[in-house]
Length: 405
Image (cartoon, rainbow, N blue to C red):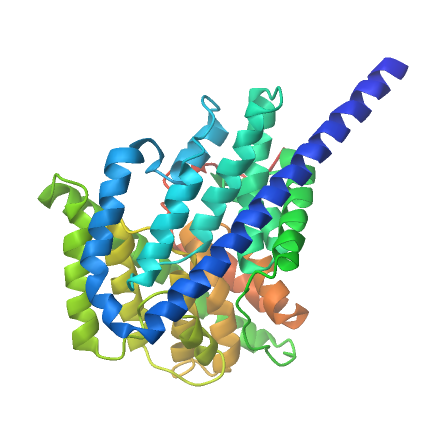
């Protein structure tokens, strides 16, 4: 009995230590990344001519991955595949490659995100612990899940959402609760590490306290259907661009090169340049001022073209941009506050695209307060249902039950 208890104590101590290390690595990487990304964004804003170098930046990113990063080019899908079937430790070079390529994407004006990069760095760095400790396949799996959630939460500044995201993103319709303790420890350690290192998290306008109303909830449900279809269209468009470039061009570096040429032409025609980079100011604006349907449509096009051609950075912030501006515009036809619909759309479109309605509901609550909870839950789950199960992450497994141990 004493031996069994001792073994259990040793196991939990070991897993706690590994989770803390995972969180420290993910939080440090997220902070370094966010600081670098802020520099890239500020440099581009102060030197708008640099956008014209986007094709050359794309070629360089494609060339680096073609020659040195072919084995990590799958990014998040590689991590998900390793979680499902642990075989080999994710190469350490994933971290510097995705960091450099994402910074270059944003420096030159690609319409991409950032949380996907933080997720890849958090998971790949956590997996390196296998080199220093005798970690079995089951422990690797747990650490990869913890690192994934830790990177997500540290980059956004939402540790509770990060805690759940790591467990939820693995499989469609199933929450992997077996790793809950490690995900919890890693996510909060990563968040506090990023805060301690003064990571420049994005801040969004708060939403006034919202009184619960069944009529409003019904309208949010309708909006959730549209959020889900929007996510589905985005996924289809992105994958269509991927297939188009694969069919037209055999030399990988030329895909982002030609996509970059098309993007700068479209930016020039559009004129405002509001769709380059992350677009955080426009997300913030959509939470405070009425907008139009043009913003989500154009952001979807520019991001699908950017990500679908080989630029790096991920889709989270672009999907937040799309969801927030779409929710804002829906207030034109739905008798609901544009601020409420924008805040729900902030989380719901990504929930549908990533098949993570629980994590996104929690994220909305962390960012906008408890009064948004019933609307966020309805919006995220309805979006998840109507978006279908073919999400932005092809490495996800598809299940039928929501809860599983």
